Image (cartoon, rainbow, N blue to C red):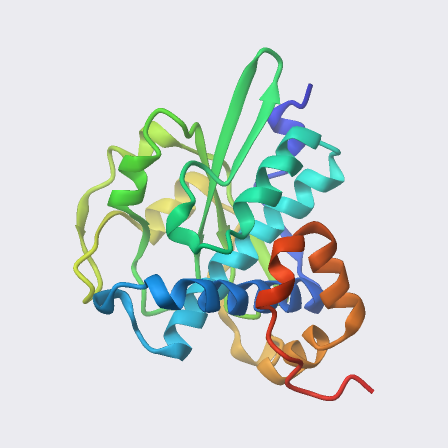
Length: 243
């Protein structure tokens, strides 16, 4: 049986290959396509913003999926394979991103992220989603990663109960309350080795054009659909030549 400490190695900076962002871009675009017909008007931020939100979520879940595959946690792989993409839309999925056995009990994780934008002062977790995970989530796995960044910092696991104590408020203009911990406090408690200013550096990031070119490669598309067969009909046509 898998031990949590062996499943996810935390409190570390990790390099991110462009292929991971290519996988995430394909998954995000497929999610946008599957969600469009069911997306509430108040949550529709336009194609670009919808994609940005789905891209960050897709990257973080795929990062965890890769870790679970590497540890051969078969029950976790099976759970995530079905959770990562639902053709009926993400609104049809419930529960944590990962469930896997640890001895005689189930360990459940949900993945969250902070994009390292220097203008953002809080690590925020949607309050409604936090409430829905009550009783079925032990920890949050939190990643500090800029959009298309070549590095990410994997924070220490955040206990679900700890987030209950975070102040609640509305940070955005979409009317969603969130549990908010000042980012300086988050780093002090869960990511003391993180340098979010260095992670944010725009010049160091992959360009969208390079990521799209990578995502157009047959081996990338085939690699993703090998694990997520239901994704295939929702993949966008390659936007660049693969030759």
